[in-house]
Image (tube, rainbow, N blue to C red; front, side, top):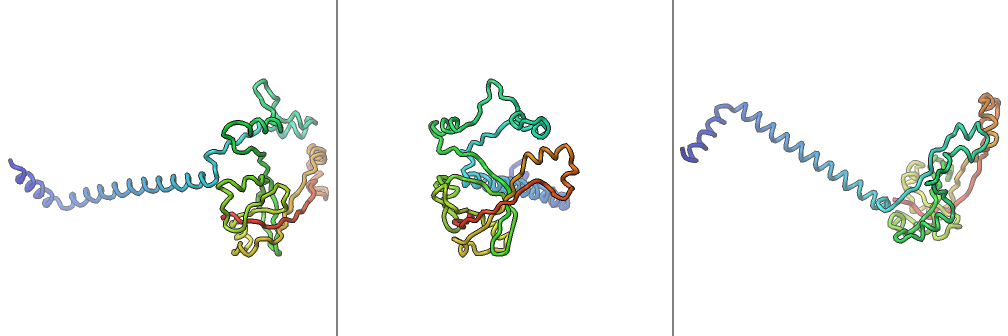
Length: 229
């Protein structure tokens, strides 16, 4: 039997079972298309995520976090210093000297404490709640903060200026961030009176006695220096 005979036989079998041939071909095509689509989606998602991490310098960022903090001990044992887990022989207490030592290590670009807190942002009769983060001015020289959508990063730690995200401005109905550079924005925070809170912890009814939570509102005004894209 020659190759031409085999080909004619194969074509004849396909012609006699048209429905089965159609279903088999459709299954193979759909399976291959689904596989290609899944691989393309996974590769694209991985590429986008890697780009976001690279833009934020997260691939070369190391974050040091404290040990667990026992809120029950904080409220009821009387000494906030004992609320954290006791330091063992392998525990390093992070101080200014520790930060300086880490900063002096080869390959370390900068070391700074991570300070973030909720704020109420007010501008021109509009307001929104957001998270504020205290960042050093030298961070403006990194790739993540050197190219802003509008304005520029602050150049001194003592400068009374802030950088906000374009997303926050859109939430406030401000769609032209380039026109807002230099304008004054107010940030409102609350300070928790820890002593009064611990006094009231044993008697929750004090919170409903008319005074509410023992907090104090504080407001600060800053010039808008830049807008993140």
